[in-house]
Image 1 (cartoon, rainbow, N blue to C red):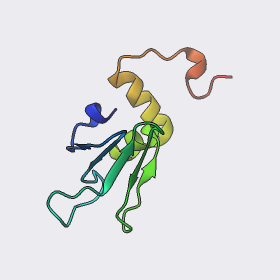
Image 2 (image 1 turned 135 degrees about the vertical axis):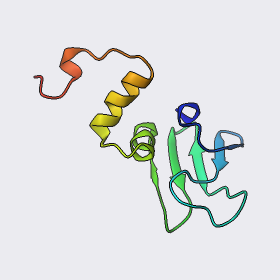
Image 3 (image 1 turned 90 degrees about the horizontal axis):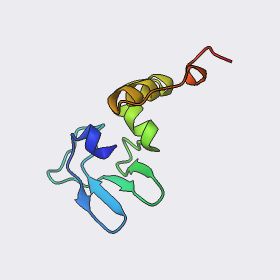
Image 4 (image 1 turned 90 degrees about the vertical axis):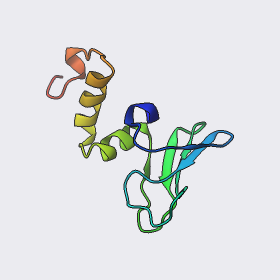
Length: 92
């Protein structure tokens, strides 16, 4: 997912990636306020003015400014996944 967004550079740590936040303008060059925990599959911006956080779907939705349902459809298209009819909105 991080590669697909590909807009920000991350710095390697043990099971964590850090880098500048893709959601707000950084005030410092080399900022590492954005943290992704690979074990827990969550992200968080440590800047108190931003405080963005969530899971990979939340990240995709926020980065592309989409509602969650639309983010699912966008991800499926991006990664060439076929959704079954019962996985689409409005079907029982």
